[in-house]
Image 1 (cartoon, rainbow, N blue to C red):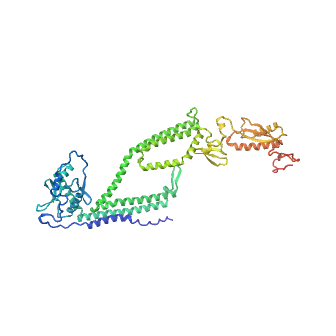
Image 2: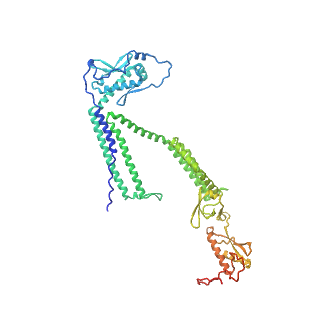
Image 3: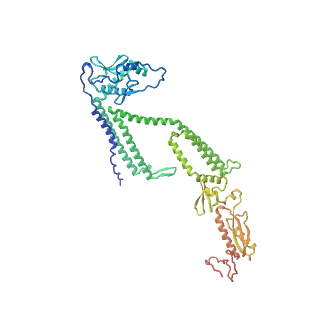
Amino acid sequence: MPAQRPPRRPRQRAWVVLLPLLALGLGLVLAAGTGTAPAGAQQAGGQPSGAPSAAGLVPASGTGRAATTAPPASGAPSAAPPQEWITLEGRRVLEIRSAAGAQPLRAAAARGSAMLRQLAENPAVAPEQLVVREDPPYWMVGVEGADGRFTPQLAVDERAARAFGTSRRDLAERYRDQLRAAIRQYRSTHSVGAWLRSTALASLFLGIYLLWVRGQSHLERRLRHWIIQGQSPALAGLRLGGNTVLNAGQERSALLRLLRLLHWSLLLLASYLLIPLLLGFFPPTQVIAEGLRGHIRGVLEGLLNSAVGAIPNLLAIALILLITRIVMRACLDWFGAVERGQLQFRGFYREWARPTGRLVAAAVLLAGLVIAYPYIPGSGSRAFQGAGLFVGLLAALGSSAVSTNVISGLMLIYTRAFREGDRVEINGVIGVVQDRDLLVTRIQTPRNELVSIPNATVITSPILNFSFSNREIQRPVALATTITIGYDVPWRQVQDLMLAAARSVPGVARDPAPLVLQTSLNDFHISYELNACVADVNLYRETLSALLASLQDRFAEAGVEILSPAYQANRCGDASTVPRREPPGSGTADGPA
C-alpha cells in the first residue's frame, strides 16, 4: 500500500508577501503624490516663474562684506573646519564649510536645501541657466533669465574658498556644476517614464520573489515528506565510531527542526534583501533603501573584517594547540614506556607511570590553553570576563569536596596502598579494585556488586590488601581459622588432623607449609589456630570454605568432637555430637544415640 502523503501545510504567513507589497505600495503612493509643476511663463524682467529668492544664502549688504574682510587672529591654532551639506531628497549635493555673512552654517544649509528643491521642481528653470558672476567681494551662483537678468542664489566669499583651499571662482564653478548635475538627475528620475519604468521593475522583482517563495515552499514540503517517510538508509540513525548517537526517530526529529529553521531563515533573508531593492526603484524612498543597503553592507563588512582579522590569531591558536598535542603525546608515550618496563628509574614504581603521565598531560594542556586564551577572538570582551567570573564562582563553591577527594586520590596513588586488580578490604567492603580515579575508588564484591567509595573516605579507613604480599615479597597471603577441642584429646592428634585437612584442600599452597598454633588454654577446651597460605588470592573465600569443610570431615573420621559451643556441665550420659559415618548411597542420617 503506498504511503499516504502528509497533509498540505497552510499557506505561508501573510507577512512573507505583505512586507514587499508594502514597500511597493509606499513607492507608488509617493510617486502619485510627487508631481512635476507645470511649466509657467517667464516673469517680468526675465526671472523664471517660481524661482527662489536670494534671501538667506546671499548676505545683506554691509554685514557680509565686513565679516569677510576681517582678518583671522594671528597665531590662532588651526582646527578642522565645520561642515554642513545642502541636500536634495536626502542626498548630499554641496558641502559648505563657511556661510556668507554672519548667518549660522546649519541654517544656511537648510535654506540652501530648500532653494535647490525649488529649482529642481521648477521646470521653467533649465540647468544651463545656472551661471557664475562676480560681485566683489563675492562670486555668485545664480539663475540667469532670458532677458539677461541675474538672480543670485549662492554666494562664495574668501573665507569659504580658504576653507576648501581654492579660489572663490573655482569654488563657485564647482558649486554650479554640482547644482546642475543634481537638478538633471532629479528631473530624470521624477519623470513619468522613469516612474513607470521603476514600477515595472519593482513588479518584476516582486513576481520573481513570489515565485521563489512558492518554489521554496514546495521544496520544503517535499523534503519534509521524504524525512517523515524515513525510507532512505541515510535516515536509519547517526553512528560515530560504533556508537549510536541518534536513533532513527531522533535523527528525523532533528532534521525536521533543521529544515524548518533553514526554510524560515531563507525567507527572512530574501524578504529583508527585497525591501531595499524595491524601495530603491523610487526616488523618494531611495534614501531609505540606501540606509538599509548600507546596514547590510556594514554588517557583511564587519563580519568579513572580523574573520580576516581573526585569521592570524586562529593560526596562532592552531600552532599552540598542535605543539601542546605533540608534547602531551610525547609525555604519554614516555610514561607508557615506564609502565611497560622499557624505561626504569630508581625509586619510581611502574604503577606510578599512568597517573603521573595523566597529570603531566593535564598540566601541559592547561598551560597550552592559558597561552592560547589571549588569541581567542573576543577574549577581552565583557562577555568572556563574565563567563570566567561565573566559572570561577562555581569552582570556588564546589572546590572543597572535590579538592579533598583529588588530594586523597593522589596520596593513595603515591603511597602504593593498592592498585587495580588487587583484592582489598576497605571500610568493611571486600572485593577486587576495578577502578582508581582521582575522586573515587570502585570495588567489585564477590557478589558482583560495584561499590564506589570516595577517596576521602578511603584515605581515612584501614586498607587490607590481600594481593600486596604475593606481588611485592613473593609470599602468598595466609588465612587463619580457629577451632576448640577438649582436653581429653591429645594435642598432637589434633595438630595432625588439622594439617591433614589443610593439605587435602587444593587451594592451599604447599610452600610455606600449613602451621597449627595453640592460642589459648580455656576452662573446658583448647583453642587451635590453623594458618595456611592461599595459592590464588582471588579464590580466598572458596579456599576458606573448602578448608572448614575438610576440618569437619577429618575430625568426624577420627571421632574427635569439636567443642563449639563449649559445654559447661557434665552431660548425663548424652552421646557425643560427632556425626556418624553414613554408608555410601544410604541417603539418610542417624541421629545421636
